[in-house]
Length: 135
Image (cartoon, rainbow, N blue to C red; front, side, top):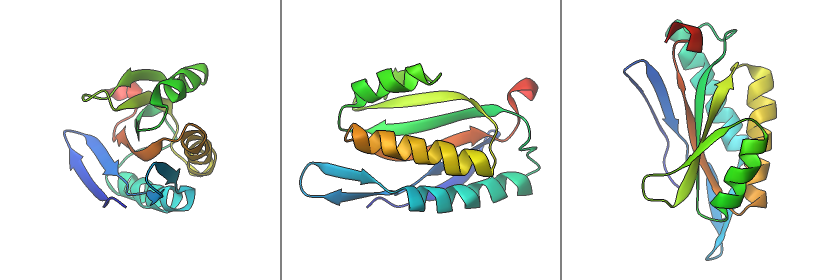
């Protein structure tokens, strides 16, 4: 399991979550409950830094290993813009979302399940502190 840290840098709140568990040599399971708990903490931190969570902001998600190309194709169908990671060992997916409880429970569940379906690790997400319209 990887560690988690959260930093604020240049107007972005970055959270990398150790939210997956290795089971065997090649199996990865993305842990929704850990993602959800950590997301709740991040949403609180965004609000503490003055973020208006009623407005959409760019959210970037990170996935590694497994069939990340297949996952990227599936994410495109859901409106995500995707690109490979720097080392071409995963996929980065982003789109504008309103970060609230519905997003935390719905979107993170969906992304964790999709990561599991494609054998990928959902490593976390980051979001801009300011909404898209203000960037």
